[in-house]
Length: 280
Ligand SMILES: Nc1ncnc2c1ncn2[C@@H]1O[C@H](COP(=O)(O)OP(=O)(O)OP(=O)(O)O)[C@@H](O)[C@H]1O
Ligand SMILES: [Mg+2]
Image (tube, rainbow, N blue to C red; front, top):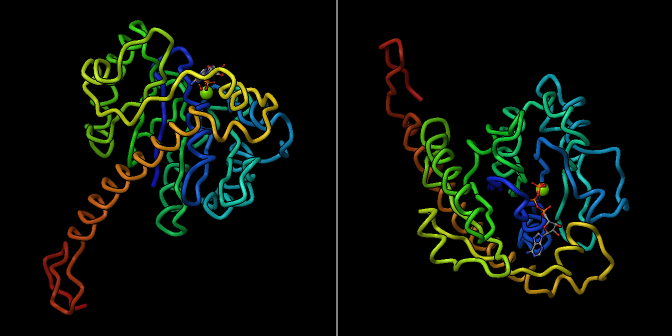
């Protein structure tokens, strides 16, 4: 499945929460850094311990002539601290490179990754209104997760962004019902139920405020693997499970519709566009 995560404004914790989900994802997964303002995981969580010569830009260069899908595996790096198939597709280094990325083609590659290899993609798409936004990835996603803090200023902006996203997904994507919220609780923030109502969105979960664990995930502060047992990572893991289930429902419905729209292939004659009939 393809799950895209975005924010309305103000760094609510998209990268931190998405990384925590990827580290605890129960199946093969690629954390794809599609933030057009640049990726953070290599310099942050990985603290320079991973090769810096792979990622989105290299994929774009090598993958011209529609060979991106074949090139993708060579541009992935295993996420530190994981022993299974949990990978990172490092993002661009600076916002100047964003205009060179073919988000449409990339969205197709991510969808094929699940169809052909059963690998899920968590795409960190950053702030939704950024220049050269990866809108095609959101439009192709089985689930779009709007990440927001629980303060009133953050929720006010998120309400407007949710409305704009709903319209775009309805008109250009896979439907407005793909949109859900993930809350990052701020000290003294509002409750999950109150905010769910304000946003008028189903809420995947609430990530607790935990500065120490968040610093490990966003800055690579040394906490060994104790961060994996923090409340933050546990909540992200639960939200990830729910995201997987909801995305799977959307994926299966869309798949069933695609199949029912295909011509019958059991030997009955199938009418063609030209009006003649052909056997199968
Ligand atoms: N659950 C949390 N508890 C405490 N601090 C957090 C939490 N989530 C994120 N943070 C902190 O908030 C800051 C921003 O987090 P992060 O980079 O994940 O946000 P973002 O939405 O990806 O931002 P940007 O739009 O800049 O990419 C970081 O310093 C991070 O450590
Ligand atoms: Mg980020």
